Structures are given as structure tokens and as C-alpha cells.
Length: 282
Image (cartoon, rainbow, N blue to C red; front, side, top):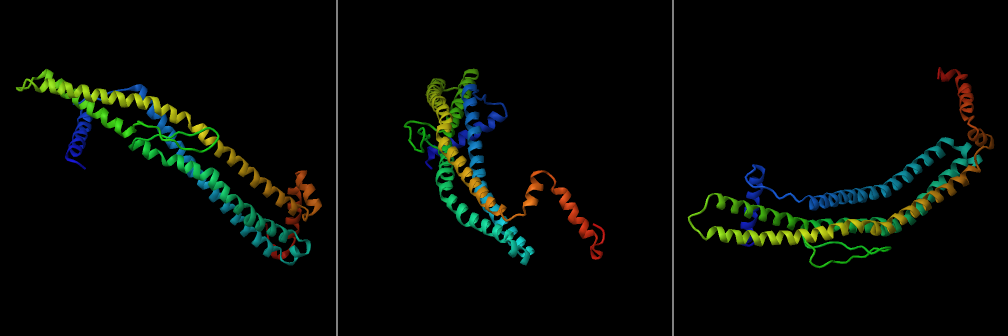
């Protein structure tokens, strides 16, 4: 960092302290502050979306892993009885196929069409905050375009502090003139320069931040569509495989479940268990 840059950082830090103590008046630009709040809201929502999107894929894997463990336990629980009617083995095979084929087949497309685009979108926030960058998203597809002369939010905050600091200096020199008669005119010229720099940067942000916010929807649309299709495929595959297992279930049990009479069937079996001397009271 150059000496000039170091001095600017020191001056800005001092200005922040003086603002907190009321010695320097902070510029209140409600229009820009509103757009910045909208931007921060979008940034937080996008980062949350990325986190939840990763969690969805992890949840699918966790669910099929849990199904696998349940299937193995049920198959062991049924033992020879399950082997005779094929129900437990059929369920185990269906769950294994769902894990081996469906989940693994969805992993790549999900990353390519959902996770990666959202990750790329979120990766721009540090650049927008710190540097001269902004993201343009084309409708219907994921594409990037760097707009020239787009100023970052952090830079605007620095310019605002410089402007507030110079304005406070001019006010002090006006109220209590310095022995050097040229100091006030010099400070006023510097104030005008910092004011112009701040206003120019502010206008750019007012123009570009709403564009960035508005373009979030056309950017996300393809990923949202892909997410729905992937979920539909997973649910359809899971339903299809479980439907194959259903044919091995007892027809009477299926009918009783459909009619809401399964509770009475369960109570009937529990009654038979209670009749056993070794079962005690259940």
C-alpha cells in the first residue's frame, strides 16, 4: 500500500470515529440506501439458496442411505418368511436400484444446472462489494458480461466518508478561520472534487444496482426449471420402483389400508401377541 493510500485509510478510520461521536455529519442518501438494502436482501437470499440447494442433494443421499439400512434390517427381520413371498427382497432391490441408478444419475445434472449456476451467481457478490464489477445475466441461459465503469459498493462508502470529512473541515474553517487565508479556498476546492467524485459514483450505483437486482429472475429461471424437473424425475422413479414392490404385498392388507381399516388389523395381531404367556401386558 502506498503512503497516500495509507493516509486515506487513516483519515477514513478517523472520520468513522468522529461520525459516531457526532463531530462529523454523515450524508443521508435515502434512495441509494434503499437500493443497497434491496441488494443486501438479495445477497442474503442468494447465499441461503446456495446453502439449501447443497443441503437438498445431501438430503437425497441421506434419505436413500437410510432407506438402504431400513431395507437391509427388514430383510433380515423377515428372514425366510420374506424369502417366500418376496416382499422384503423386492423392497431391498428397489431401494438399491433407486440409490445406484436414480440418485447417481441425477447428481451430475443437478450440479451442472442448479448448484454451479447458483454458486457462480453468489461468487460475484464479493466483487460487487469490493471492486469495479457487476453481473449481467442473459434471459433463458447462464452467461456473464462485465459492464465497464461499474463502481463497487465499498468504493462508494469510501467516497462518501471523504466527502463528509471535507465538508466538516470546510465548516470548521468557516466558523473558525485559519491564520493561513488560502487554507479555506483550498479545502473548498477539495470538497468540490470529493463531492463530484461521490455523486458520480452514487449515480452509477443507482443505475446499476437495480439492474443487477432485476436480472436475478432471468438468471435463476433455468435453474429453477431444472430443479423442478429433477425433483419430478426423482419422485416418478421412486414411485415407479415402490409400485413394483406393492404387487408383493398382501391384497387384503392393501385394501384395508386404502379403506382406513389397517388400525383394526394391527390391533388384531397385537391381541394375538398379548395372548402369548411370554408377551406379558402390551
